[in-house]
Length: 478
Image (cartoon, rainbow, N blue to C red; front, side, top):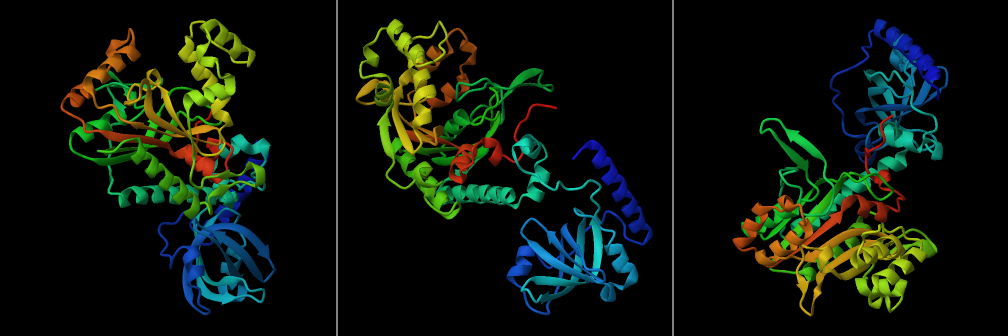
Protein backbone atom coordinates (compact mmCIF):
# COMPACT_ATOMS: atom_id res chain seq x y z
CA UNK A 1 0.00 0.00 0.00
CA UNK A 2 1.41 3.38 -1.03
CA UNK A 3 1.59 6.51 1.09
CA UNK A 4 -1.05 8.04 -1.22
CA UNK A 5 -3.38 5.12 -0.54
CA UNK A 6 -2.79 5.48 3.20
CA UNK A 7 -3.69 9.16 3.05
CA UNK A 8 -6.89 8.47 1.10
CA UNK A 9 -7.98 5.74 3.52
CA UNK A 10 -7.11 7.99 6.45
CA UNK A 11 -9.24 10.83 5.12
CA UNK A 12 -12.20 8.49 4.66
CA UNK A 13 -11.77 7.13 8.17
CA UNK A 14 -11.56 10.64 9.58
CA UNK A 15 -14.85 11.44 7.82
CA UNK A 16 -16.43 8.31 9.33
CA UNK A 17 -15.08 9.28 12.75
CA UNK A 18 -16.60 12.75 12.52
CA UNK A 19 -20.00 11.30 11.54
CA UNK A 20 -19.85 8.86 14.45
CA UNK A 21 -19.02 11.64 16.89
CA UNK A 22 -21.95 13.69 15.58
CA UNK A 23 -24.18 10.66 16.23
CA UNK A 24 -22.99 10.41 19.84
CA UNK A 25 -20.19 7.83 19.51
CA UNK A 26 -16.93 9.30 20.89
CA UNK A 27 -13.87 7.93 19.08
CA UNK A 28 -11.72 6.92 22.04
CA UNK A 29 -13.38 5.36 25.03
CA UNK A 30 -12.17 4.64 28.51
CA UNK A 31 -12.67 1.30 30.22
CA UNK A 32 -15.07 -1.42 29.12
CA UNK A 33 -16.13 -4.03 31.64
CA UNK A 34 -15.81 -7.38 29.84
CA UNK A 35 -17.34 -10.68 30.88
CA UNK A 36 -13.95 -12.11 29.98
CA UNK A 37 -11.52 -12.45 27.12
CA UNK A 38 -12.96 -13.94 23.95
CA UNK A 39 -11.34 -17.32 24.59
CA UNK A 40 -12.99 -17.41 28.02
CA UNK A 41 -16.38 -16.48 26.55
CA UNK A 42 -15.99 -19.30 24.02
CA UNK A 43 -14.91 -21.79 26.68
CA UNK A 44 -17.86 -20.87 28.94
CA UNK A 45 -20.39 -20.51 26.11
CA UNK A 46 -24.00 -20.94 27.20
CA UNK A 47 -26.87 -20.57 24.73
CA UNK A 48 -28.90 -17.51 25.69
CA UNK A 49 -26.28 -16.23 28.10
CA UNK A 50 -25.60 -12.51 28.32
CA UNK A 51 -22.03 -11.24 27.81
CA UNK A 52 -19.95 -8.11 27.33
CA UNK A 53 -17.06 -8.57 24.89
CA UNK A 54 -14.45 -6.33 23.29
CA UNK A 55 -11.94 -6.59 20.48
CA UNK A 56 -10.66 -5.30 17.18
CA UNK A 57 -13.05 -5.46 14.21
CA UNK A 58 -11.41 -7.80 11.69
CA UNK A 59 -14.09 -8.69 9.12
CA UNK A 60 -17.51 -7.30 8.21
CA UNK A 61 -20.20 -9.06 6.12
CA UNK A 62 -23.01 -6.60 5.39
CA UNK A 63 -26.32 -8.36 4.65
CA UNK A 64 -28.36 -5.17 4.32
CA UNK A 65 -30.59 -5.21 7.41
CA UNK A 66 -28.06 -7.22 9.39
CA UNK A 67 -24.27 -7.52 9.68
CA UNK A 68 -22.06 -10.42 10.69
CA UNK A 69 -18.59 -9.38 11.85
CA UNK A 70 -15.57 -10.86 13.61
CA UNK A 71 -13.77 -9.24 16.52
CA UNK A 72 -10.41 -10.38 17.88
CA UNK A 73 -8.61 -9.78 21.16
CA UNK A 74 -5.34 -11.20 22.45
CA UNK A 75 -6.88 -14.62 23.07
CA UNK A 76 -9.27 -15.51 20.22
CA UNK A 77 -11.73 -14.30 17.61
CA UNK A 78 -15.52 -14.26 18.01
CA UNK A 79 -18.42 -13.57 15.69
CA UNK A 80 -20.89 -10.77 16.45
CA UNK A 81 -24.25 -10.08 14.83
CA UNK A 82 -25.84 -6.65 14.43
CA UNK A 83 -29.49 -6.14 13.39
CA UNK A 84 -31.36 -3.01 12.48
CA UNK A 85 -34.41 -4.04 14.52
CA UNK A 86 -32.25 -4.66 17.62
CA UNK A 87 -30.05 -1.55 17.44
CA UNK A 88 -32.56 0.83 15.88
CA UNK A 89 -32.01 2.88 12.75
CA UNK A 90 -29.44 5.23 14.30
CA UNK A 91 -27.45 2.56 16.12
CA UNK A 92 -27.38 0.31 13.07
CA UNK A 93 -26.45 3.15 10.71
CA UNK A 94 -23.64 4.13 13.07
CA UNK A 95 -22.41 0.52 13.21
CA UNK A 96 -22.12 0.58 9.41
CA UNK A 97 -19.70 3.51 9.70
CA UNK A 98 -17.17 1.38 11.58
CA UNK A 99 -13.96 0.47 9.77
CA UNK A 100 -11.85 -2.68 9.85
CA UNK A 101 -9.35 -2.25 12.68
CA UNK A 102 -11.64 -0.26 15.00
CA UNK A 103 -11.79 -1.45 18.61
CA UNK A 104 -15.34 -1.92 19.85
CA UNK A 105 -17.16 -3.22 22.88
CA UNK A 106 -20.46 -5.10 22.56
CA UNK A 107 -23.08 -6.44 24.92
CA UNK A 108 -25.63 -9.01 23.94
CA UNK A 109 -27.00 -12.53 23.96
CA UNK A 110 -25.10 -15.65 22.97
CA UNK A 111 -26.56 -17.88 20.28
CA UNK A 112 -25.41 -20.44 17.74
CA UNK A 113 -25.98 -19.83 14.03
CA UNK A 114 -27.38 -22.47 11.65
CA UNK A 115 -23.79 -23.17 10.57
CA UNK A 116 -22.76 -23.86 14.18
CA UNK A 117 -20.91 -20.59 14.78
CA UNK A 118 -20.97 -19.24 18.34
CA UNK A 119 -22.09 -15.62 18.10
CA UNK A 120 -23.02 -12.56 20.15
CA UNK A 121 -26.30 -10.90 19.08
CA UNK A 122 -25.49 -7.26 19.75
CA UNK A 123 -27.86 -5.31 21.98
CA UNK A 124 -25.57 -2.31 22.39
CA UNK A 125 -22.09 -1.35 21.23
CA UNK A 126 -19.40 1.20 22.05
CA UNK A 127 -16.56 2.58 19.95
CA UNK A 128 -13.43 2.17 22.08
CA UNK A 129 -10.66 3.24 19.69
CA UNK A 130 -10.92 4.46 16.10
CA UNK A 131 -8.26 3.11 13.69
CA UNK A 132 -7.28 5.98 11.40
CA UNK A 133 -5.01 3.80 9.26
CA UNK A 134 -6.09 0.51 7.70
CA UNK A 135 -4.68 -2.89 8.48
CA UNK A 136 -2.70 -4.42 5.62
CA UNK A 137 -4.64 -6.86 3.49
CA UNK A 138 -1.63 -9.15 3.00
CA UNK A 139 1.08 -8.92 5.59
CA UNK A 140 3.43 -11.73 4.67
CA UNK A 141 5.94 -12.80 2.04
CA UNK A 142 9.58 -11.99 1.52
CA UNK A 143 8.95 -8.50 0.19
CA UNK A 144 7.37 -7.52 3.50
CA UNK A 145 9.78 -9.24 5.90
CA UNK A 146 11.49 -6.09 7.18
CA UNK A 147 8.18 -4.24 7.36
CA UNK A 148 6.80 -7.07 9.50
CA UNK A 149 9.68 -6.67 11.96
CA UNK A 150 9.52 -2.88 11.92
CA UNK A 151 5.74 -2.79 12.46
CA UNK A 152 5.41 -5.89 14.60
CA UNK A 153 2.10 -4.65 15.98
CA UNK A 154 0.54 -5.08 12.53
CA UNK A 155 2.21 -8.46 12.12
CA UNK A 156 0.60 -9.59 15.38
CA UNK A 157 -2.84 -8.27 14.44
CA UNK A 158 -3.00 -9.74 10.95
CA UNK A 159 -1.02 -12.99 11.31
CA UNK A 160 -2.49 -15.20 14.06
CA UNK A 161 0.39 -17.69 13.67
CA UNK A 162 2.87 -14.97 14.65
CA UNK A 163 0.85 -14.14 17.74
CA UNK A 164 0.74 -17.86 18.57
CA UNK A 165 4.54 -18.12 18.28
CA UNK A 166 4.97 -15.34 20.82
CA UNK A 167 2.34 -16.92 23.06
CA UNK A 168 4.51 -20.03 22.99
CA UNK A 169 7.62 -18.03 23.78
CA UNK A 170 5.86 -16.55 26.82
CA UNK A 171 4.72 -20.01 27.90
CA UNK A 172 8.22 -21.44 27.38
CA UNK A 173 9.81 -18.81 29.62
CA UNK A 174 7.19 -19.53 32.28
CA UNK A 175 7.97 -23.26 32.09
CA UNK A 176 11.72 -22.61 32.34
CA UNK A 177 11.13 -20.62 35.49
CA UNK A 178 8.92 -23.41 36.85
CA UNK A 179 11.65 -25.99 36.22
CA UNK A 180 14.15 -23.93 38.19
CA UNK A 181 11.74 -23.02 41.00
CA UNK A 182 10.89 -26.70 41.39
CA UNK A 183 14.59 -27.41 41.82
CA UNK A 184 14.83 -24.85 44.63
CA UNK A 185 16.45 -22.01 42.66
CA UNK A 186 15.84 -18.37 43.55
CA UNK A 187 15.46 -15.71 40.87
CA UNK A 188 17.60 -12.63 41.44
CA UNK A 189 18.45 -9.37 39.68
CA UNK A 190 21.93 -7.94 39.18
CA UNK A 191 23.06 -4.63 37.63
CA UNK A 192 22.54 -4.15 33.91
CA UNK A 193 24.65 -0.99 33.98
CA UNK A 194 28.14 -1.77 35.25
CA UNK A 195 31.40 0.04 35.90
CA UNK A 196 33.25 -2.79 34.15
CA UNK A 197 31.96 -5.09 31.43
CA UNK A 198 32.95 -8.58 32.49
CA UNK A 199 31.90 -12.21 32.43
CA UNK A 200 32.50 -12.66 28.70
CA UNK A 201 34.73 -11.49 25.89
CA UNK A 202 32.58 -9.06 23.93
CA UNK A 203 32.44 -5.43 22.87
CA UNK A 204 30.14 -3.50 25.23
CA UNK A 205 27.81 -0.57 24.68
CA UNK A 206 29.14 2.48 26.52
CA UNK A 207 26.96 5.08 28.25
CA UNK A 208 27.68 7.95 30.62
CA UNK A 209 26.42 8.28 34.19
CA UNK A 210 26.00 12.03 34.59
CA UNK A 211 25.47 11.99 38.36
CA UNK A 212 28.82 10.29 38.93
CA UNK A 213 30.61 11.83 35.96
CA UNK A 214 31.81 8.44 34.73
CA UNK A 215 31.38 6.10 31.81
CA UNK A 216 29.39 2.92 32.41
CA UNK A 217 28.73 -0.21 30.35
CA UNK A 218 25.59 -2.12 29.51
CA UNK A 219 26.35 -5.59 30.73
CA UNK A 220 27.60 -8.27 28.40
CA UNK A 221 26.92 -10.98 31.02
CA UNK A 222 25.70 -11.13 34.66
CA UNK A 223 28.19 -13.88 35.62
CA UNK A 224 30.55 -12.00 37.91
CA UNK A 225 27.72 -10.58 40.02
CA UNK A 226 25.93 -13.92 40.30
CA UNK A 227 29.15 -15.52 41.53
CA UNK A 228 29.36 -12.82 44.20
CA UNK A 229 25.99 -14.13 45.38
CA UNK A 230 27.47 -17.63 45.70
CA UNK A 231 30.12 -16.12 47.96
CA UNK A 232 27.32 -14.44 49.91
CA UNK A 233 25.54 -17.72 50.62
CA UNK A 234 22.93 -17.96 47.86
CA UNK A 235 23.54 -21.52 46.70
CA UNK A 236 20.99 -21.83 43.88
CA UNK A 237 20.36 -18.67 41.83
CA UNK A 238 19.30 -17.71 38.35
CA UNK A 239 18.72 -14.52 36.43
CA UNK A 240 16.63 -14.22 33.29
CA UNK A 241 17.19 -10.84 31.73
CA UNK A 242 18.85 -8.84 28.96
CA UNK A 243 22.48 -8.74 27.87
CA UNK A 244 23.92 -6.28 25.35
CA UNK A 245 26.81 -6.80 22.94
CA UNK A 246 27.89 -4.19 20.44
CA UNK A 247 28.78 -6.69 17.74
CA UNK A 248 26.44 -6.42 14.79
CA UNK A 249 23.31 -8.09 13.45
CA UNK A 250 22.81 -11.47 11.79
CA UNK A 251 20.43 -14.40 11.55
CA UNK A 252 21.77 -15.72 14.87
CA UNK A 253 22.80 -12.46 16.59
CA UNK A 254 20.89 -9.52 18.02
CA UNK A 255 22.78 -6.88 20.02
CA UNK A 256 20.14 -6.99 22.76
CA UNK A 257 19.23 -10.54 23.76
CA UNK A 258 17.60 -12.52 26.55
CA UNK A 259 19.90 -14.76 28.56
CA UNK A 260 19.22 -17.17 31.39
CA UNK A 261 22.20 -17.68 33.72
CA UNK A 262 22.16 -20.36 36.42
CA UNK A 263 24.60 -20.98 39.29
CA UNK A 264 24.47 -23.79 41.81
CA UNK A 265 26.92 -24.28 44.66
CA UNK A 266 28.39 -27.68 45.54
CA UNK A 267 27.88 -29.16 42.07
CA UNK A 268 29.80 -29.10 38.80
CA UNK A 269 29.29 -29.56 35.07
CA UNK A 270 27.23 -32.71 35.60
CA UNK A 271 24.65 -30.73 37.57
CA UNK A 272 24.29 -28.26 34.70
CA UNK A 273 23.89 -31.11 32.22
CA UNK A 274 20.90 -32.45 34.18
CA UNK A 275 19.29 -29.02 34.25
CA UNK A 276 19.68 -28.18 30.55
CA UNK A 277 18.42 -31.61 29.53
CA UNK A 278 15.33 -31.17 31.70
CA UNK A 279 14.65 -27.64 30.45
CA UNK A 280 15.02 -28.42 26.74
CA UNK A 281 13.03 -31.67 26.74
CA UNK A 282 10.31 -30.31 29.05
CA UNK A 283 9.78 -27.11 27.03
CA UNK A 284 9.91 -28.95 23.71
CA UNK A 285 7.32 -31.48 24.84
CA UNK A 286 4.95 -29.25 26.79
CA UNK A 287 5.06 -26.03 24.77
CA UNK A 288 6.09 -27.01 21.25
CA UNK A 289 4.27 -30.32 20.99
CA UNK A 290 7.01 -32.93 20.97
CA UNK A 291 10.68 -33.80 21.02
CA UNK A 292 11.09 -33.65 17.24
CA UNK A 293 11.23 -30.28 15.50
CA UNK A 294 10.77 -30.12 11.76
CA UNK A 295 10.05 -32.76 9.16
CA UNK A 296 11.74 -35.95 7.94
CA UNK A 297 15.48 -35.69 7.29
CA UNK A 298 15.67 -32.09 8.56
CA UNK A 299 14.03 -32.85 11.93
CA UNK A 300 15.91 -32.04 15.12
CA UNK A 301 15.38 -34.69 17.81
CA UNK A 302 15.97 -33.42 21.34
CA UNK A 303 15.18 -36.73 23.02
CA UNK A 304 17.94 -38.11 25.27
CA UNK A 305 20.73 -39.10 25.22
CA UNK A 306 22.56 -36.31 23.39
CA UNK A 307 25.90 -36.80 21.72
CA UNK A 308 28.93 -35.72 23.79
CA UNK A 309 32.18 -35.07 21.95
CA UNK A 310 35.44 -33.27 22.75
CA UNK A 311 36.40 -30.08 20.94
CA UNK A 312 39.68 -31.62 19.81
CA UNK A 313 37.93 -34.64 18.31
CA UNK A 314 35.61 -32.44 16.24
CA UNK A 315 38.55 -30.42 14.91
CA UNK A 316 40.38 -33.60 13.92
CA UNK A 317 37.27 -34.98 12.23
CA UNK A 318 37.08 -31.84 10.08
CA UNK A 319 40.74 -30.98 9.46
CA UNK A 320 42.55 -34.30 9.80
CA UNK A 321 43.93 -36.44 12.64
CA UNK A 322 47.32 -34.69 12.34
CA UNK A 323 45.92 -31.15 12.79
CA UNK A 324 47.39 -30.55 16.25
CA UNK A 325 50.81 -31.80 15.07
CA UNK A 326 50.99 -29.25 12.24
CA UNK A 327 53.14 -26.16 12.30
CA UNK A 328 51.26 -22.85 12.37
CA UNK A 329 52.25 -22.25 8.76
CA UNK A 330 50.89 -25.60 7.59
CA UNK A 331 47.72 -25.21 9.67
CA UNK A 332 47.08 -21.80 8.16
CA UNK A 333 47.56 -23.20 4.68
CA UNK A 334 45.10 -26.02 5.31
CA UNK A 335 42.55 -23.64 6.82
CA UNK A 336 42.85 -21.20 3.94
CA UNK A 337 42.38 -24.10 1.51
CA UNK A 338 39.09 -24.69 3.34
CA UNK A 339 38.22 -21.07 2.40
CA UNK A 340 38.68 -19.54 5.85
CA UNK A 341 39.71 -15.90 6.03
CA UNK A 342 42.47 -15.66 8.67
CA UNK A 343 43.98 -12.55 10.23
CA UNK A 344 47.78 -12.45 9.77
CA UNK A 345 48.54 -12.24 13.50
CA UNK A 346 46.46 -15.25 14.60
CA UNK A 347 48.22 -18.03 16.47
CA UNK A 348 47.39 -21.75 16.38
CA UNK A 349 44.68 -21.40 19.04
CA UNK A 350 42.86 -18.67 17.12
CA UNK A 351 43.17 -20.46 13.77
CA UNK A 352 41.81 -23.64 15.35
CA UNK A 353 38.88 -21.84 16.93
CA UNK A 354 38.05 -20.21 13.62
CA UNK A 355 37.86 -23.71 12.17
CA UNK A 356 35.46 -24.68 14.96
CA UNK A 357 33.22 -21.63 14.63
CA UNK A 358 33.09 -21.46 10.83
CA UNK A 359 33.39 -25.09 9.71
CA UNK A 360 32.42 -27.35 12.62
CA UNK A 361 29.72 -25.72 14.74
CA UNK A 362 27.29 -25.13 11.87
CA UNK A 363 27.34 -28.86 11.04
CA UNK A 364 26.08 -29.85 14.51
CA UNK A 365 22.36 -29.97 13.83
CA UNK A 366 21.27 -32.51 16.43
CA UNK A 367 21.77 -31.61 20.14
CA UNK A 368 25.48 -31.99 20.86
CA UNK A 369 27.44 -31.31 24.03
CA UNK A 370 30.88 -30.15 22.90
CA UNK A 371 33.33 -30.59 25.80
CA UNK A 372 36.92 -29.92 26.85
CA UNK A 373 37.63 -26.57 25.22
CA UNK A 374 41.16 -25.08 25.35
CA UNK A 375 41.67 -23.36 28.71
CA UNK A 376 42.70 -20.07 27.08
CA UNK A 377 39.23 -19.72 25.55
CA UNK A 378 37.31 -20.02 28.84
CA UNK A 379 39.20 -18.24 31.65
CA UNK A 380 36.30 -18.50 34.13
CA UNK A 381 36.09 -22.32 34.07
CA UNK A 382 38.01 -24.89 36.10
CA UNK A 383 40.61 -27.07 34.34
CA UNK A 384 39.92 -30.76 33.73
CA UNK A 385 41.58 -32.92 36.36
CA UNK A 386 43.27 -35.15 33.80
CA UNK A 387 44.53 -32.35 31.52
CA UNK A 388 45.04 -28.75 32.69
CA UNK A 389 45.28 -27.52 29.08
CA UNK A 390 41.51 -27.96 28.67
CA UNK A 391 38.60 -26.87 30.85
CA UNK A 392 35.60 -28.73 32.26
CA UNK A 393 32.90 -27.16 30.10
CA UNK A 394 30.32 -28.02 27.53
CA UNK A 395 28.57 -26.03 24.87
CA UNK A 396 25.14 -27.30 23.86
CA UNK A 397 24.95 -26.82 20.10
CA UNK A 398 21.66 -27.28 18.23
CA UNK A 399 20.75 -26.39 14.65
CA UNK A 400 24.34 -25.30 14.08
CA UNK A 401 24.47 -22.68 16.82
CA UNK A 402 25.55 -22.46 20.44
CA UNK A 403 22.52 -22.44 22.73
CA UNK A 404 23.94 -23.10 26.22
CA UNK A 405 27.51 -22.93 27.52
CA UNK A 406 28.12 -24.47 30.96
CA UNK A 407 31.17 -24.67 33.25
CA UNK A 408 32.56 -26.24 36.34
CA UNK A 409 33.27 -22.80 37.76
CA UNK A 410 36.73 -21.54 38.69
CA UNK A 411 36.75 -20.76 42.43
CA UNK A 412 40.52 -20.49 43.01
CA UNK A 413 41.14 -16.72 43.31
CA UNK A 414 44.85 -16.97 42.55
CA UNK A 415 44.38 -19.05 39.41
CA UNK A 416 41.46 -16.84 38.40
CA UNK A 417 43.67 -13.74 38.69
CA UNK A 418 46.34 -15.41 36.58
CA UNK A 419 43.83 -16.32 33.89
CA UNK A 420 42.20 -12.88 33.78
CA UNK A 421 45.61 -11.19 33.72
CA UNK A 422 46.61 -13.25 30.69
CA UNK A 423 43.31 -12.48 28.97
CA UNK A 424 43.53 -8.74 29.64
CA UNK A 425 47.07 -8.42 28.24
CA UNK A 426 47.96 -4.74 28.17
CA UNK A 427 44.45 -3.73 29.30
CA UNK A 428 44.90 -4.66 32.96
CA UNK A 429 42.33 -2.06 34.00
CA UNK A 430 39.67 -4.39 32.54
CA UNK A 431 40.23 -6.85 35.40
CA UNK A 432 37.33 -6.74 37.86
CA UNK A 433 39.17 -6.40 41.18
CA UNK A 434 35.95 -6.42 43.17
CA UNK A 435 35.11 -9.84 41.73
CA UNK A 436 38.56 -11.18 42.61
CA UNK A 437 38.24 -9.78 46.11
CA UNK A 438 34.94 -11.60 46.49
CA UNK A 439 36.57 -14.86 45.38
CA UNK A 440 39.25 -14.42 48.03
CA UNK A 441 36.52 -14.62 50.66
CA UNK A 442 35.79 -18.14 49.45
CA UNK A 443 33.37 -19.17 46.72
CA UNK A 444 32.12 -22.75 47.06
CA UNK A 445 32.64 -25.16 44.17
CA UNK A 446 29.85 -24.59 41.69
CA UNK A 447 28.39 -25.31 38.29
CA UNK A 448 27.18 -22.47 36.10
CA UNK A 449 25.37 -22.21 32.80
CA UNK A 450 23.91 -19.70 30.37
CA UNK A 451 21.01 -20.45 28.04
CA UNK A 452 20.30 -18.12 25.14
CA UNK A 453 16.53 -17.85 25.32
CA UNK A 454 16.10 -16.32 21.86
CA UNK A 455 18.17 -19.06 20.25
CA UNK A 456 16.46 -21.82 22.20
CA UNK A 457 13.00 -20.60 21.19
CA UNK A 458 14.12 -20.21 17.56
CA UNK A 459 15.39 -23.81 17.49
CA UNK A 460 12.37 -25.34 19.23
CA UNK A 461 9.91 -23.40 17.07
CA UNK A 462 11.76 -24.14 13.83
CA UNK A 463 12.27 -20.43 13.15
CA UNK A 464 14.99 -19.52 10.67
CA UNK A 465 16.15 -16.31 12.35
CA UNK A 466 16.19 -14.75 15.81
CA UNK A 467 14.15 -11.85 14.47
CA UNK A 468 11.16 -14.17 14.18
CA UNK A 469 11.14 -14.82 17.94
CA UNK A 470 12.00 -11.32 19.21
CA UNK A 471 9.03 -9.01 19.39
CA UNK A 472 10.97 -5.91 18.39
CA UNK A 473 14.33 -6.92 16.90
CA UNK A 474 16.98 -4.30 16.25
CA UNK A 475 16.86 -2.95 12.69
CA UNK A 476 18.88 -0.48 10.73
CA UNK A 477 17.24 2.98 11.09
CA UNK A 478 15.27 4.10 8.06
